Image (cartoon, rainbow, N blue to C red):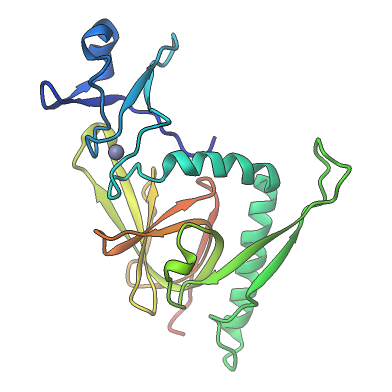
Length: 244
Ligand SMILES: [Zn+2]
């Protein structure tokens, strides 16, 4: 699965407006060379003609503008394929829960700072799968959300964790492409935004223990750090009881 980079519409320069794929289907010759990303109008798209779900994709040679919400996706989908081979859903789930258990334990022990975990955890993958010859041992780095996110961490995969505040932002600019952002406010005052297809039901006044696996990107034109999860399920949060 991973990140879908399909488009159901495109921006047409000649008409300077967005056009849906239904229109394109019957007039491919007219638009063939005039199909751009509907968000940044910059990246060129191409038509993928499959009977059931015809769609558009970004041309491999083409770039989205840096502040486009689709900017990182071509890179990510390749990454996801690679990392998905190493991490199964079950392993992701185990990773999330073991870190969460750790956070919860630390939360009970008032003498310890719950934002401090070991810098690295070793994820041992006993590959029962196709390539069982080698026992691959991969490192999934951990990153506290309450330590400043810098360029050093930009675009790298981490298991992020920490005690944070959460809120939901609903994007309704496009009714046909409605989505949400799960916003994470850290102690450092940094905001991480995770794009979600479903609305997270939260207590926005509460504090949460949060763990997720994914990539984060600080962008010049944005106050928040954008996050791509390693799959929709690569996130776990539990509300804390009372104040801590
Ligand atoms: Zn774009």
